[in-house]
Image (tube, rainbow, N blue to C red; front, side, top):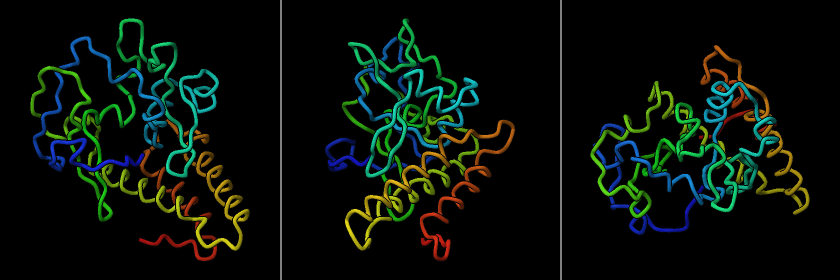
Length: 233
């Protein structure tokens, strides 16, 4: 999700690599769950997030939508799932009565990042520390990559870049359509395909996620560029 603010407004002004030390460790939150309340539609899921939830809870996208723990919204021109906030307090649907996360072991990437964010440039990204977001009185330094707590970090990093690039391609796919209505129909077709290929279709348990993602990416690239099925970098 793009934010229409400058990096200086929301961060300490620095950009971090995975091996850089950053003051992100909030020491187990110590009972605080403010980052799980009132987040609106901002906790957006990517395919790896959905795969983790599917395998962790033994349910698929249709069940999550029916149970009201996920919802679909338009994000920068793409229809994507996000964690749903519920009740008067607008609490995350996965936050239990004690204010703890019921899916902590397989929580989405945005939750793992917090209070870090990603800054994309030149086909890659680095991390920035969001200021004014986390209410922990004291945070200690930790390596950015370790804080995210995701195995096989190199493949995960490459996957995040690939997914970000794919969404950018989707956003511009309707440009150049002969008519406005034709462009709208094309955008709708591609969005429905994105949902079906990457989210509605279950991931196979026991098989490598990244290999499954690569196959689905090629399938979707074929729809983005049906004339030559090439991915332009």
